[in-house]
Image (tube, rainbow, N blue to C red; front, side, top):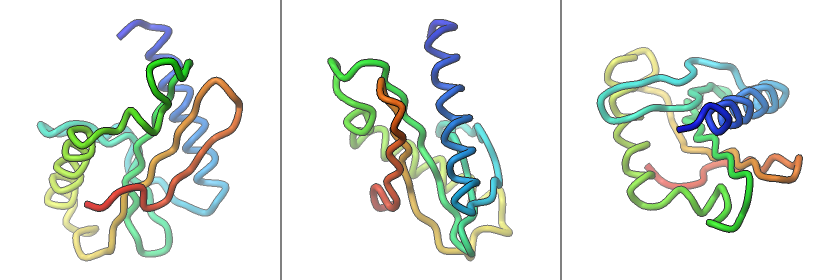
Length: 118
């Protein structure tokens, strides 16, 4: 990935994190990695563990940020979340969900709660 694309993705994560924190979510982990993949943000809303995938697309020509989360990507996120809950036992008994924060060319941020089932 080029440095400019990586910077845009990181900038998107910073914007998403700030937005979610303003909405009352608390950060548990950022860019949490395991052999199954990476979780952009792991947050807590009430007692619910929220796995947040942040998607940034500069242009919609190849599909928007939401469309980029296909079945294969969802399965990767689910597996990574399972590893997270195995390693971080204190969160294993909490309810959990998968959210997506999509950012694009416009300044609008689109937060989709419970974007897909895990």
